[in-house]
Length: 114
Length: 112
Image: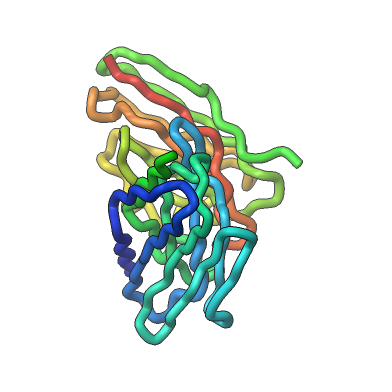
């Protein structure tokens, strides 16, 4: 089955700086990579995702890059704001393969300091 | 449209009692997942349903945990003879075709 590692486990940045979170996966068949943001006491919410047929995707201040050869993908947040403070989870899956191949990373706690 | 809903939002129970947690997925979503999240921790996979069947029960922590789904819609997670270590937030998610998961607000279970 799939195994997903995520680094760092905690990350503190100054407001306005960039933040980068990296994930690696083990199953070369994985082709779908979502990122979820979970604010304190709230449900995880999808913020961006990428499929294996592209190498990068951007949505305003958030971008995700994928390196299929190295089996890693990264979340980039630019011009960080205090409201970006949350726990971020990556995941890897084989699209349409519902169960054991949808695996979450352990999470990164991001703190944006004013 | 309506998102994933869960009930109750909070449940306090005494050790040894049984509890039932309910999940209403987004209409039309064939896949449904249950996760457990302890305070400050990640998402622990419990079980998933494809339609009404549960091909992967590997994450259920013990035989005190069971789940069912009826009509390809509502799911219930039952914990029998609850223990203090069962205290956590139980999250449900649904997915239209096994990739993007949409989470419910969770049920916070406290076992005294």
